[in-house]
Image (tube, rainbow, N blue to C red):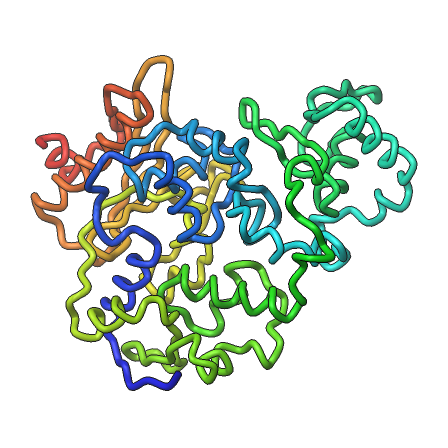
Amino acid sequence: MSSSYQISLDSARALHLSAQGLLKNPRRQPVKEDVLQCIRRMSALQIDTISVVARSPYLVLWSRLGAYPAAWLDELLAEKKLFEYWSHEACFLPIEDYGLYRHQMISPDGMGWKFNHRWQQEHQQEIIRLRDFISQNGPVRSVDFERQDGKAGGWWEWKPEKRSLEVLFTTGQLMVAQRRGFQRVYDLRERVHPAWDDEIHLPTRHDAEKSKILLSVKALGVAKASWVKDYFRLKNISPENHPDQLCKQGLLIKIKVGQWEQPAYVHTDHLEQLELAADKALKASSTRVLSPFDPVVWDRKRAADLFGFEYRLECYTPAAKRQYGYFCLPILRNGKLVARIDAKAHRKQQIMEIKSLFLEADVRISDTLAADLMKVIREFAVWHTCTDVHFSPADITPFIRRMLAF
């Protein structure tokens, strides 16, 4: 579908945030179905285990829905409305998209470190025995198996059963049936997703790739061609599935954004929002704290292109070399990424500690800004069951004093 739509960079940001469910602040009390619809809207909810504040998947949902019971996400997984697999990274995914990932399971050799081909070859009999054990005895967790080699735990010291579970998971023989205390519970695929049949339901590779490209553009709201692959970590896009070809099929709309040299693409489902954006009538008004693994910022280059926001997660950086903090959270306000906070929830003491707050260099300081930031930080704290917000004494700047007045 050809188009003469031209929109400003601000309107492109608004279109992106509209697609992501972040255009406006939450306006009503959410229900559990909202969690599922939110994940469908994003197409993928990235999983991360760092827990200085709420783990990332729960935080991404809070940013869009406001205060909701975190247990709803776990319940939807157990109810088989979601499944886990490798997407952008390890993600919760809508169960109806299972077929889009099936080819990766059947032929996982191109998945790099996510598939331990050598372990599969060298430990084939142990893997078969583990699968048989699950078949006969029911679901298992990694923690159900004791270490026998005397080594400590950790990512690079997985016990043999954990490695075998991951091979069976990546090849689609096991699925995550539920999580207990955020630990995966593995069971046979045919028990977790009995309705699936490769003979009946498996799409072609071409169609699966095409669906992922369309879903990524839809989730992004507006996308350069160079952004599309990263959303689902596609290595390559076949020429017939290039966004230009999908425009010719009437599935995408090609547009011009601001001063960008590259064209951008919009899913036809967002035509109404695109028309509002073209008329400069699509306005972002939300103020939200984001996870470092939120789709808005997980592609750091895209965040720089779209928001002018240079962002790096520093939890893997030695403390002395950190610029902003261990687990710095971006703050979105009125369509721009205006600040970042390094926060830690002290749940037993019911204190949300803000170790540092940094405003972006081009942000205009005002009482309205101070009030908006303080309001969202307090909401963030309350959702963590923290009744107090404490700023680090060494970080009490004149602006933070203005914030504390609200």
